[in-house]
Length: 256
Length: 138
Image 1 (cartoon, chains in turn brown, red):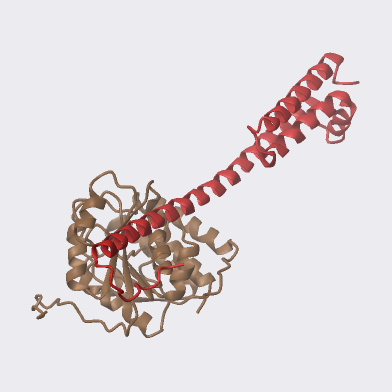
Image 2 (tube, rainbow over the protein chains, first blue to last red):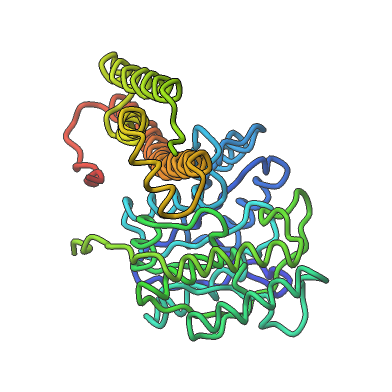
């Protein structure tokens, strides 16, 4: 198929070297944009399989997602973002995927940037790669109280895991095999993005960040629902501190 | 001076006895699992014992310079908190299980629909030998 010049944002060809990648889209009542999101992925990141985890949506999300040819898993009850994403990781583990990518169902992530996330994993440099909004000089960042909240979280988590993480709440990320194994067994429920970083650190897995621009949300509200600065931040901090003292997860050795 | 008069003791023995019998009855009818009944049996026994030997409670209350009534209230609150904590643990365990089961159910449903399609495809094809389909996940 001839490559069209995609106003400079053509899909970067990614050589996975025979390895397989799965993009997990957790979706709860995203009927308005789910098809656009999936088509965007199919067009700009054709190297990855797409899995929509329909988290007990009350609208047509599941049916619309199926129409696009994506694989859809319907959760019979709503589990929340953590439980939905974990379902995707369990699927990735069972099906033996080498890379699992997380992608929001609301259209704020860019499929054309997905390739950047995979590179450090394929190079064996990291177990989890975060697409950070704050490593790019321009583009969408967060505003006001939300920005302060994320900033404080970023400082705290960077201290805890002894590694600079500028955007701990980003849901635009890629996980390698070891992280897939870990997340399939144990994935935080309440504030999965920041909490999972602590979990990874405790299990001795490596995290790194790459710059990523994001779009402004078109429809719907953030899955990080009450991003009311201080309140949100203190709850996340508490959860993160609790994660630090929790007993480590014992994983079964991966059968080669 | 003794705090517990005989009316109090009868009331305590009755309350403890009834609670104990109710717990046993619920276990017998399999409406209460043994693992959740330990706290209740222990409490019922404690109430019963304090009715039969009220001097124990009075002695403890005197040692820690509390009125026996205050001591009893305090013990009740302590017990209620223990039960609530126990419930929180049980709820956490169950929500974790429910999450795992929900995920497993969704994954299995997906696998069944895939297998169905495979079977449908296989039936459409003429019965000539074709290469084995890739191994299913175990």
